[in-house]
Figure 1 (cartoon, rainbow, N blue to C red):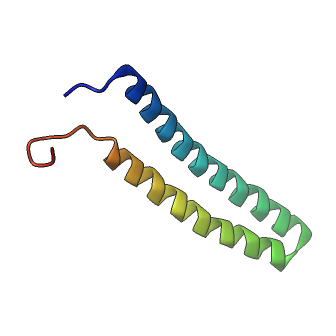
Figure 2 (tube, one colour):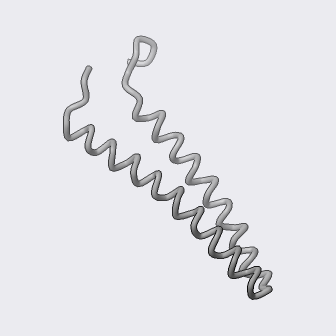
Figure 3 (cartoon, rainbow, N blue to C red):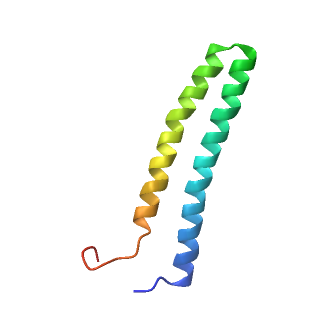
Length: 77
């Protein structure tokens, strides 16, 4: 079964959003880490670590979206 053009575009947008979420989480970790180290603030460093958990969630979401967008096969129609 071939995906309809509008489904393909929607799939691309979903995957793009998941990818953007990963990149944003990485950027926040880097920015917060630099700011925390530069200022010596443990609170900001803790926020960078907290953003690490957000990155883990974003990576999990990205992986799940990729699996969900796979086309059906004989074992999984």
